[in-house]
Image 1 (spheres, rainbow, N blue to C red):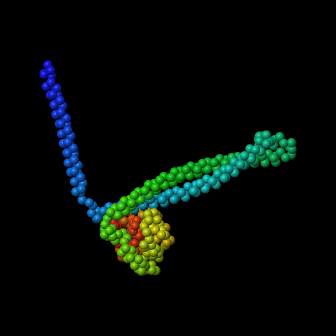
Image 2 (spheres, rainbow, N blue to C red):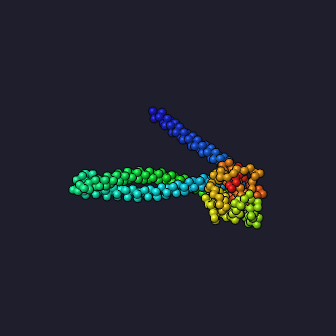
Image 3 (cartoon, rainbow, N blue to C red):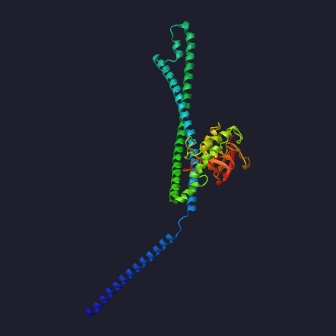
Length: 361
């Protein structure tokens, strides 16, 4: 029996060992396969070509354009929030004045109630009827009637004042809710703008020095050569409105020339910095013409033009979303605030897709 059982024990041990070796072999095989796969993936990733300078600058342009589009949305919401704030302040002031009048009416009613209490709470007509001076009965009855009429008028006036105060306070509450929502939207737009500008600057920093210089030298994007050209262009400043269609347009052009070299700052309307619509608004404001704040409202603020009708002072709008604006100065050129990092400068009007032209005055 022992001899018979012993071989079975060896067979069980050998089978277990074989299964363990098979499992280890499979694990090693899987590990090697995984490593091979990882190596292949890493090789594929390493083989992917790095973006070219042209591709990077295209991405930078897109980020700056998106930031400018968001800036115009920010400007619109900011303008709305400022109007809402003025309306809220006016409502609160009116509510305060109405409350003063309501309190005065309530004080008058309180005085009447006190007088009635002191006389025993009797109706004025009954008090007259009980007077000990019959000769003055009719006179006092007339006075009491008028006093009652005045009291009724006072009560009705107080009721109207209370209703008006309640209405004003309700309107003020709604305006405050609108203002709170607008401020939250401004905060969101601000974060978006700052994020896109930061991304653009990160990509810009990844370019070589030569590529950065080439990007900066492009028309409409600042750069040392462009800045010198802009400063030299001041000598060509039109005088007397000889080239512009009227004196106001000439003044707007003169203002734009005076802004050359000043920095682009999103949301700025001058005098030391501008965004694109802030510059055109300020230029025409110097000529006594009030333009709306944003590109997409400025395009509707004047006479629409064809390209053949363009004259100095006219406004030029770009991109399908009307997200950029410049001021025409003649000879196919404009003055505009291009983007963060690029100062107000002269540029050809064909460097961006032109979608609309207007004459404010």
